[in-house]
Length: 122
Image (cartoon, rainbow, N blue to C red; front, side, top):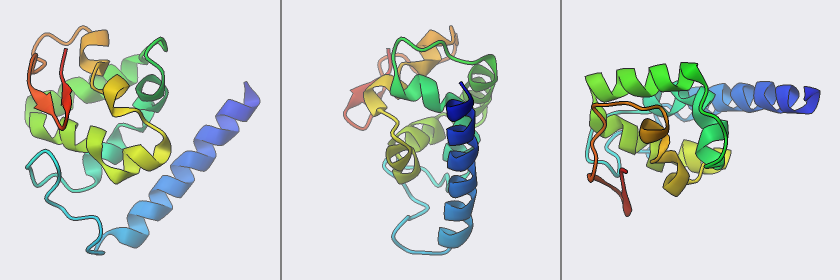
């Protein structure tokens, strides 16, 4: 249990460092696979969802559901961008699993049937 906690702290520290150092680099464009101008903020704000994005059987933390719900209300395309982002991929998130999080959170206004890259929101 302590090793998971240490890993999560380590991951967050690396993520913050990564975001700070690549903010203006061209290899991570602000226009993303979802077609929006979302930047890195959505992916960084969904750090509490990482466990649920790696494992379809993992319980989705309430804080993750809150962040996903808020993102769907304000800019739904940015959720797809976060799921497909290099940050999520480098953290080990599985896009096929991550796209199921809104359903696993019982979010009613999720974009059912919409494509997110090659994945479809259930």
